[in-house]
Length: 359
Image (cartoon, rainbow, N blue to C red; front, side, top):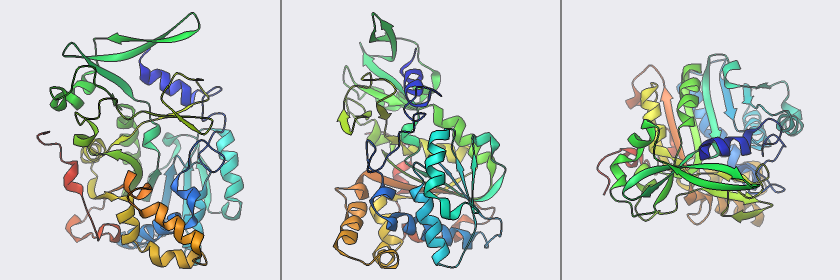
């Protein structure tokens, strides 16, 4: 089977997959995400969402739709901040796994009247508002490819004698070839990287659901030119097992989290294809500072040393502020030149997402 099929089974098998068992990021999980660091992250995101709602004209049926909501702490912090500001609107979560939904319901017990759940994206009705994805796309299955004898091969796997073994298949999906052909000649022999195809159908489906509004995406990744840089010879695949970073995706299948950096140029291209204009792209630190995290931290906490420390972890380049990026796309049916989002007031690097001459 292709590595992408293996990764999908390891993460999403309904009985034995990593997420089906209720494994989630957090203080007790294999890795930490921004919402687990401090409520100011969600509150700052909420402040940007409130501005987006104003741009849409403050519709009464405004909806926040989140996929990959984890334990639900981002939803909790957003709803708490919105309530503090005197607003109330609906929040929907797409969650296929009952074990994870149970955790989210417990975390969000004070907001159950405002939150609803959908098992699949297809169940979501058309809406206007914001689609929110924080560290969602890094968990989509990826195809592994490698340059061998000046040709591109895809990594497949098989099980023999109880052991997982890789082998090479010459045939690659044409979409894989289209994604990397500009960069292939710059790669050295043995260069290995990833291509994610699964995002394409998901993006198309959610774009069809959005009548009017925004995509707000936060994740770790690179513009394509950096993603497929000649120096990145081993790709970006990341694995966690029992709180430890490991370099073996075949270690304890179903018990190891496997993820991959996001190709943000792909998200821009998919936005273009599905009628979504890319409005902003910047590093998480710049985005949060532009949104006023330095003020908001005093609205949601006492501003003690531990609170300021958390803000630093969220915004500094050596922390999540540099490793994570924020991408916003919109469908507004009005002049996009009039749209100015505060999250990009300090920096907007959309130009990095243009897929031009590589090097």
